[in-house]
Length: 154
Image (cartoon, rainbow, N blue to C red; front, top):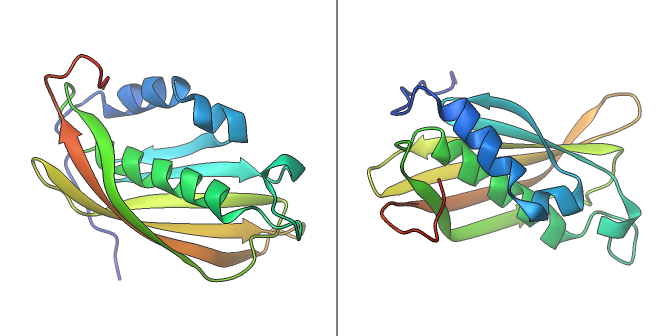
């Protein structure tokens, strides 16, 4: 199946997403980095860190959900107008396998953009020492575009 192609409303969407991501302290705290930005799609990389694990040494589900939520949110943001901020209003995560690897690739993709509500999907892959990837989680997320509120930055 070929990926959906979207036309961004803001020609400067990439710079806007990068600036917003740079302000997100949670992503800095867990070490997530922007890897790729396209209209309707954002990929983050998350290195393994002991501080992010649960008692068995796997990346904690909450840390994975946090990074996938951002990947999905920024994917939706790429298609929103320049003056819009984005908030997640719902998500569901499916944990498919223990999150163990040297790093993780988290991809958010828009399924259906909307003026106010956007639906996205996310996928998280664990990457091992040989570069092999294993799908460890999926997410469905619903986003809301927010405009005209000073406390919601775009």
